Length: 548
Image (cartoon, rainbow, N blue to C red; front, side):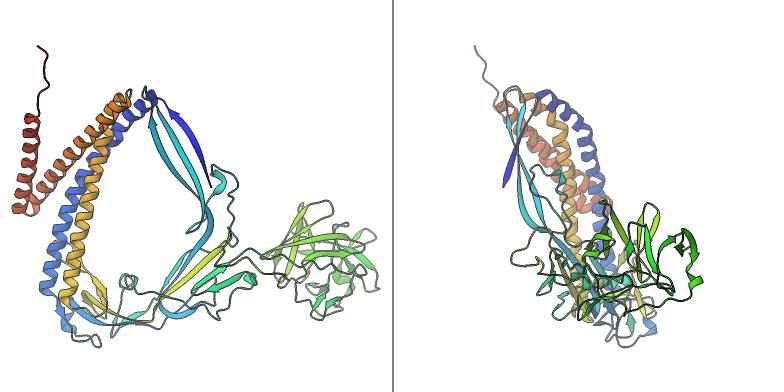
């Protein structure tokens, strides 16, 4: 499934945009210079801090006791990181275990729009852009907004909201006699999948989930069972719909209250003589009154009224049918309940203590019907083998309560703190497993080297892309004839590559002159040699023949 969109950008518009890009490209090129310089200083200082740390580091024979003579020293110690903390998922209390870390990852099955664009240069300098939009169903880490999709028919929904990624870490993790810092705990790795077998799930997900390994699949809400009340229902009399379901009245604190009387904008209440009177509610005063001969009377004037039947403990979705009150459809969505009135208004029933409150145009219509679990039919759409758009997939992983670790850090009492080298850089290492001091420092040095090269490439790429943007107007000018524009674009690309490479080498060499002069001079000579080579090749280029 795909759709194409064809647009044309004029030569003048392209030329104007290319000139605008000169400023952005210049800033990008200049930003690469301090990045490269800073990176070299960082690399040298980190290497020196590691060398200093390795020379003074003391390896401890065991973590089971603390030697005060090592206070403030950089120490190397190995052992088991352990915790007694129990970590519990706040939304899924059935996920609870003793662990160093508990992680919840949420994914959504959504339509995803993919976009690819190809350009075709036209004679005269304009460019025809053919953009292809394709669509596929994928598991993604956050819901996709389908309202901006180019092609209709790929609408996204989410069947279960209000749950996000979450990571919980144990607050008390020890290694022998030492307590680990929060930073050290966060670096402990080695997650394992949480086994979801026999784990209780929230009630609102009943019938909507499927468990596969350590993944919980949540499908669409199942439809409510439509169970109308008998037309012969009488106010004040409990109706038994099944051996386990009753519909009866609840009570306003200490007072009997019947079902909602929508026509009277209130409810009916039974007086001591057995007569039924309309009841109105005053939200501001949090009080209810009986209307006797059109006059409000305090309910307490009539003494305590008793409920004539057991309290209902199950919810009745569907249609509430009371012969003299008409039909009030009830729709249930999770913990929210809506009532549709006879004039087609939707009234939201909001929780109030153990009861529910219906609001309509500022007038409180209180009908305290006891609502319990939703009665459902059928099954949800949670099928790991054939998910549907809107399904949610949740994965839990944990780090066990005992994990072997090796630490290089400064001993501070019964815990640790980073070791501060003479140049101000710190050493605070944690690696999984039992590792020697030499192995840990070598791994830290290798990591420093890797990041040095990564940042060197990033700095050079910033300079190269920036210079390409600065030179872009040249190739756009030549695009009046597409073949000429392509040649100029290739040529400016070579110039950008050579200039950014020479500049990067010079910046790195200057930085090393400040930190390590010998290597700095070598790099500087290499850069000069590259410039000389470019000049010589230019001089050797054959001159164009002239007509005699």
